Length: 218
Image 1 (cartoon, rainbow, N blue to C red):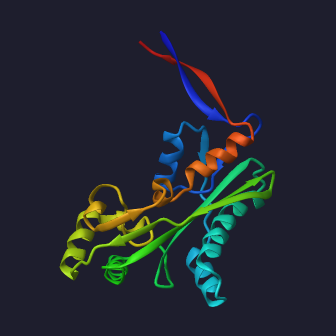
Image 2: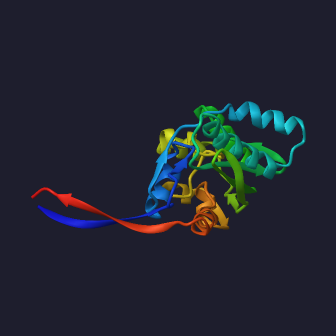
Image 3: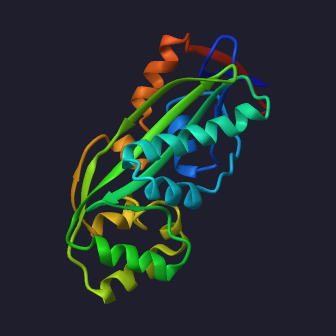
């Protein structure tokens, strides 16, 4: 039997909880070497967003509110660890876009964004011991190139259900590069999480690299 060390970043006295089952956000934390758990924190994002818009809440505040409510959802359930809630909205010409639920709504989003610049407003809120203790945000700018309806249809056929994973119906990875004409800002925030800010907060609260001994069967 062989052994080797597996290094992960941990807080000294608390677990790190991601209040999301987003595969992209989980991958970012895992690739950064964090030891964490992902727990779903379902909230009615569309209803909350529409209510906030009706109250003329600024887009940045809406994103922070949604991130906070996700983390708070787990805190209310009695989880007293370090909980990270995240949210991302797309804002274009004063209109907020969330994740589309159907192919037709995805096509409508892309048609409205075609030829225009937009902001991906990304927010993170952290709860510790049941209390809100920190937040961060970023708003990178991107632009969708001018697209025909046929090009949009072909793009959505190519990416399938991935169109429903993010506001604006696209990801910058892979085939998404074909529809973008400009991308300016923190790449982690574009993917849905202000990761460097989160890591900075965690390091200030004792984040340390630890080694686990892993045994491999031979």
